[in-house]
Image (tube, rainbow, N blue to C red; front, side, top):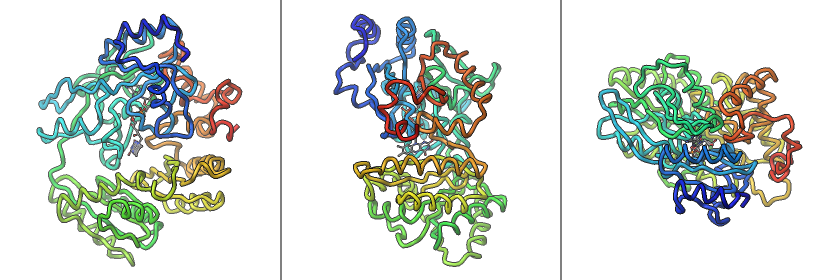
Length: 479
Ligand SMILES: Cc1cc2nc3c(=O)[nH]c(=O)nc-3n(C[C@H](O)[C@H](O)[C@H](O)COP(=O)(O)OP(=O)(O)OC[C@H]3O[C@@H](n4cnc5c(N)ncnc54)[C@H](O)[C@@H]3O)c2cc1C
């Protein structure tokens, strides 16, 4: 551990012995997030219990020029919570309280270590929920969701996390407690709130949030549509939207994933189909009925397509269980999976699927596809065994080619998982040097001493030469 004993005692004095982890075996748990290729054990782990405690921690860190890596549940998929340049992991999981629910304004005030699903559980009795539903929602925290501007299956209609955040309480690099945005949805300030949403812990610690809740839809129709080809499913997604229907969700799962999910959960899904498209409609009963009719008509014009509308809540929830267990089920096929997050224009879905397949073939890698197809957000998962010689190198090279393909098709690097350390190099492909310089300037305004999550999002030209970086497989391969 690289923390001076006097500083350690200062942290212990501030937040208590039980909230300071300095033993190697305790810190090891925090060595990475769900992007496990890059792992570095943090120098210290702090588990604060309040915004005030975070303020004290930041003041001590600032005085001693220490780096802080904020962390929620560590489910991130881009290495955002990994302390790859060393430093202190500040994990907010003990800050999981609901502070206030205001049903007049459909607002909930929470500490940001609360899980996404616990927000909706706390508000369900009022007929309200937090509509942004990442598949990791049982574990991922509101702080992590805000920092990554997380999406979910219902992003197509509901938008991403930032669309549902009225305000936040942030501890800045001086340890000051500031509010950005408002408790209710009536902003009066410069919109720094939406600068912080999606900034991946690089601008400050988001300690509390005022979230905007929405009514739980009264009428929902969900269908499992099975296709004879993935391309046909992809084209159907574009056709549905082109017909003026914006479903609540349009989620696409390929045959590899479908078989793995069915083998794991045995829900009675058609494991012989080439693709499963989950279509969900919600809202007003009459409108949903009309949209359902239109979708049935669109699908009736296709060959070899089967549509099963869920007849009960159980059937509907089983479909979502299947979708949300997709990545976990892939563990049946290979010990490691590398999930990408590129975005492409929806109309190029079928083309992108073919190009990704060719890249995987070129590197002799198996690929499973799970897509938020409605918003063109692709999650191809490259399956591999890292103990096989050369496997990791192939995955990293293929993943870079896939991301560059998304850019070439007019898309972007990330729909929801963020840049972290995973897509640092590709930032140079996605943005001009002037744009990156502008972003670096903004970071400096918020965080002069580069205390918060250093080395994330913004590519540093000296990166490959910096000490400790050569510990990381990804950098070794890419440099
Ligand atoms: C199986 C699986 C399914 C997933 N599905 C989805 C999905 O559908 N949609 C989606 O968007 N993502 C998904 N993810 C990715 C991940 O769950 C999200 O990025 C999530 O928002 C991360 O939350 P977390 O609490 O785990 O944050 P962490 O992983 O701990 O941290 C993520 C980033 O946020 C920063 N951070 C965390 N808390 C704070 C805070 N309080 N203040 C400032 N910065 C902070 C960290 O420094 C880091 O940069 C999935 C991941 C897995 C493993």
